[in-house]
Length: 133
Image (cartoon, rainbow, N blue to C red; front, side):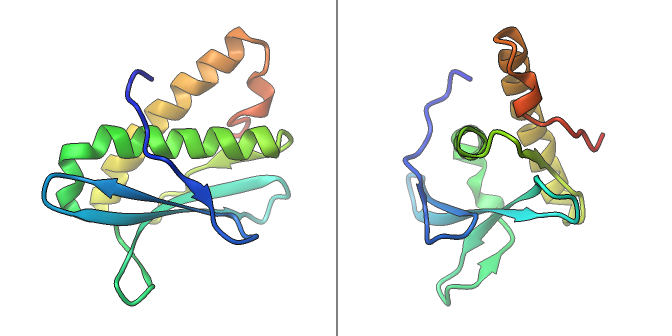
């Protein structure tokens, strides 16, 4: 991962991270939610826009100019979560609209790159142990 990431913070005591995507014409608040699945220690990752009414919405189509930085930030968030929760795994369950699936493919590529790095350092069991491919 050669792309820099946006600063991010874990908000509240839930598995919710927030960051701001900055482009030439606007700033968009982003939320990454890691929700526990039916399997203990396995979390689903979802990316949302934080809307003006504080509700979560589908990511904007207009993020294309900083998509690489958004995806790098999501990868950094997953890494942060796994460092703090080394017995857990993060997966993507595909119940999203088609444009989200394209973004999921990019995020999966980043997850695969991180997994390869961890494999080289003999820590692959900490990251993405359960693949949903």
